[in-house]
Length: 427
Ligand code: FES
Ligand SMILES: [Fe+2]
Image (cartoon, rainbow, N blue to C red; front, side, top):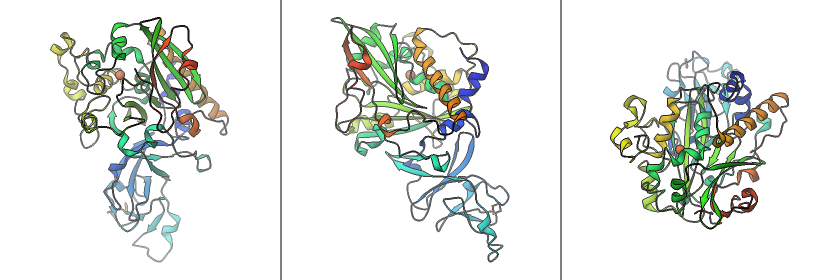
């Protein structure tokens, strides 16, 4: 349970808020590369952390993210003409470059007036099929992101995103909560093409009361959930959470590894970014088309990346499938099973009313780490935030059988370290 002030602290990410300032110190996924595929392509509206912006790729192929609204009289530059290295407002023709600098005011061609006009802008970079943005102070810009999914060859990874009508934190809390898998996703474990066949599924389905152990990592936490297995062993599912919003779900057999970024759009909505990658081989055609078709953590979306199964159509609720336990909640699809329940909490869950239990330990510690870091940064702008160091970002999840007397963080240490070409540890 959180006090109201604590809930506000961790859920509010607009300009000037402590969590908003914290998030702005990290490179964050902003757009899929395919959303800005070519020079002078269509601009894209983008709201992040309660800031409304427009992204474009200029004639030279350079990426720009600038204030959505024209400095003249506030027209949305989404209507803009992307031409000759700038975005031109269609109302009176003012033109802005990727840095937000006004480079033309046609009505005042010789006065130098445009030199004095500049819109806010943020740097972007591209890696792993994702366009990333850094929205913090220029002198604090960290090294480029090194998460494993973004650094393997393109043939080995797949990325999707979907809009979620909830605050980012309840989405993250679902991502680090391994205990719901045995209930909510139980119907999908043996049927989803990207889950089925793994021996680990049987441990998930046969032991419904996992014991959680949470271990500190320099960049975040390792959230371990153990379930009983044969021969004096535990089946451990270990989920790394990296500050502030990156999670890697433990793998199943030789299936690809998936994980998420939960990026605030504003306090009432977030982007659920979902990746799948295999550390040592290309994704097969069958895997890739299953992901494109909404299997595993991916979902089918419309042109605005809003899920086809959504609140307006009750997420496709099928009560008969619920009765028959084909889908435990009656909703088809792992990603939408999560989204439907998380959206049902209200856009910002009232954490003053919850009742946490031992399987929520990972969530409790994650909140504590977030609040501690947000407060420390508010007091000291030079505070060293966890998770910014590229070394810290090279973590992976693992699903392993360990002797019962072993400490998971030590026994699985090697398995949790990402390295190029190294196979994942997965039962
Ligand atoms: S409002 Fe954009 S040029 Fe006038
Ligand atoms: Fe889930």
